[in-house]
Every structure is written in structure tokens, then in C-alpha cells.
Image (cartoon, rainbow, N blue to C red; front, side):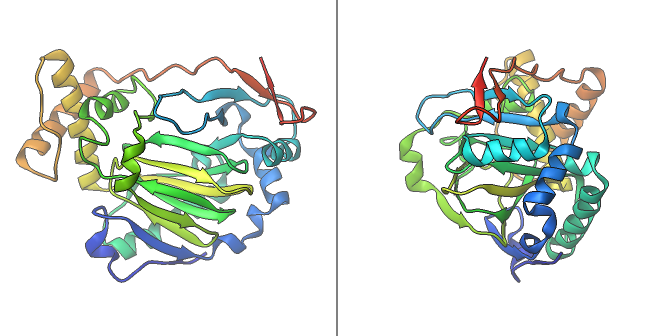
Length: 300
């Protein structure tokens, strides 16, 4: 597996959208037999199964599902004909082959970017034709690697207009999932990328984005990671959340590595030692994957 990063990667990394290419789409692990085996091997209790509503200006929580007692092949077939989004989060932690792939991928990114990369997490996304993932953001840095199918990604600025500090802080505290309020007018400010097999993109930390699959099964790698500046930024967001809630402050949004963000990052680390957020509870499943159902799912 080889990644080909553009010559400006070092100077642009973490500042703007970067497109790369790779050879992973030729790997047999991502053909149907390999995916069915992956779904059999991956711990089913850690598998994220979702249905998303169409993108709108209303915040609509995704429906959570489960897939008990069915084979990986049946699950894959249900995804092909249904409207299902599977997230095999932390595949690199659960499966040796994907742990090796994770190391190889991020080692190459380290060389290209000139940054030390840690908190490495490689997940696999398998999703139905025409599925969309609603407007949201991620606190870590993200690398999205397209393996099969086609999808369109809208990437929005990191300004307050597109994601308020209060919303980002709530995500940091795990008070809410990553979804954000959306306005149709945001699209005029978005960078749009049509991802094909063999393409990969990474973007600035905490940049809002949304995704729409084409009319074909999609397989992607969702790779989250940190650099030292990104970790400082994430901890400064966490500190701002605490200061806003506990002290009634209105802290400034973190911007770069400054004495202020370093102090906030230190505060965050101390607070996490005292009290680590419990996290949002897993919602009750609203549907089950049913290989016999016409749409691949059965509502509970």
C-alpha cells in the first residue's frame, strides 16, 4: 500500500484541504469476500449501525440499529440494498491486519507532513448507495480514504458562523454527538470534493463537513489522529467548555498554539485527571438489520 502526497503537504498540513492518492483500492481485503470476513471478525458489540435522515436545516439524530445473529455476508447484502451506514470504529485496535495497515498509513503520513502523529485510529466505513452523513465535525484530525464507490464531501470553514464555540465544546464534553445545526446557505462557502476509489483527503481540525454517497456501495477508511498542535487545540476547547459552564466565562475560541491555548490545555489535562467525562450513553436501538426485509432493516 502506497500513498502519494502532494509536494505542498508539509506547508499546508492542518491549514487547508489536502488531496492525496493511494493504491489501497486494489487490495482484495475490500472486495465482497474480504468485507464479509471483516464483518464476521469485527466484534459485533462495537459495530456502529446507523440510518441517517436526508440533509435538512433541522437537527435529526441518526437512528441506531443492531445486527445480532446474522453473518457478515448477510449484513453486507443488507447494506447493498438498504439505507445503512456501518462504522467499524477502532478496527486497528480489534484486528491485527488493520493495526498493521494503520501503522503503515500513518507512518507514510508522518513522512509527508513532517509531523509526529499519535492517537492513531483507523476505522472502516461501509455504507449503502445514496446514504448521506449529516453536517457534523470531529475534534481529532481526520484522513478519509476512499476504497470503493463514490461520494461527495462538502467541507466548510472553521468560523463561528458554521459551528459555534458552544456546540464544539458540547461535543468535546461528549454532551452530544458530532452533528451540528445546518443552513442551506452554508453550501455557498463550502469546498466540494468528489471522492473516487484511490483518492484520500485530510482537512483542518474541527472543520464542519457532510457527505453524500453516489448510487453505489461505498467503502472508506476513516482515520482519526492527533499531532501536538492538534492535541493542544482539542484540550483548549475542553478547557473553554469547563470555564464556560463552571465559571460563567465567555472564553475566546482557540486559534493556534499560543501562551493562552497552552495554559488552557494544561488546565484541561488537570481536569481530566480529576474527572473524566462519562460520555454519551448508547441510545436504544430503533431498528435491526434483517436480511429478509426488502430494505434490509426492520423497525423495532
